[in-house]
Structure formats: C-alpha cells, structure tokens
Picture 1 (cartoon, rainbow, N blue to C red):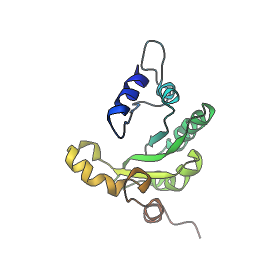
Picture 2: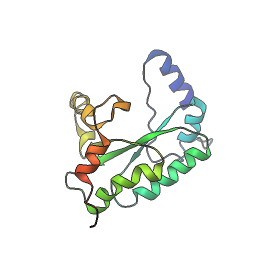
Picture 3: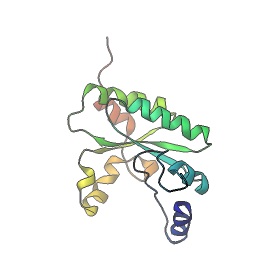
Amino acid sequence: EVAEAAAKLATEHDLVLVEGAGGLLVRFDEAGGTLADAAQLLRAPVLVVASAGLGTLNTTELTARELRTRGLDLLGVVIGSWPAEPDLASRCNLADLPHVAGAPLLGALPAGAGALTPADFRTGAPRWLAPRLSGRWDAAAFTEREAPAPFA
C-alpha cells in the first residue's frame, strides 16, 4: 500500500519522500512490510538519516549492509540533528560515517530544526543539505570545521 500510494503521488509531484520512522526494517503493516520492501517495490534510492553520537556508526553500517544485500541504492547519509555543542563521539563520527555507509555525507540538520515552522525550515534547508539534495552545504568544509584535529 505504501508503494502504491508513493507511486500515485509521483505522477502528481516532482518529488516524493517516504519517511520510515524507526529504521529500515521496522514492520509497518500486518503483512510484515518494511520500508526496505517499499523501496524495492519503488526502485527508489534510500537516504539514511543518522544520529550524530555514540552508536551511529554501528547502526549506519548495519543499515547500509542491509540496503546492499537487498540491491537498494544508498544515496547518502544525513545527520538528522547536529548538536550546538557536539561531543567527541559526534565530532569523530563525521569522518567515519561516509566510510561505514559506503556513501557520502549529504547534510547535517541543526538540533531543533524539526521544530521550525515549514517556512523557516525551507529557508534553512539549503544551508544544511548538499548540492545533490538541492542545497549548498559542503561536507568537507563542515567536517574540517567540526571534526577533532588528528593526533600529532
């Protein structure tokens, strides 16, 4: 049903996003259908939204492996909530996320962005998302600025 609804919306809109709260393999119907199943039916690329801190490397790598196992295209990774004062784990994860995902880092939304009004979110989004997602965010510059200096 999710795939059918998304396919119908795609005939009427330029872009359709299907959000899978909880993760790729969380079942959301009585038949056991998952977001991975919907992505396969739609032949849609997947954008992984990852947390910034401890545990995200494991979760992101497992998700990326499952996507590859299913033959799904991982478009990239977006950090869903970048803290105003990131801890060491968050800062270190910047360099490692693209590696464990096997896909580029395509954005970092600031903490609290989800509470913005739609108009304010649309205004801020280009600063938080890479050109591949119609923004102007630069992963290399962000990582250089936010990641810890390497040990000497």
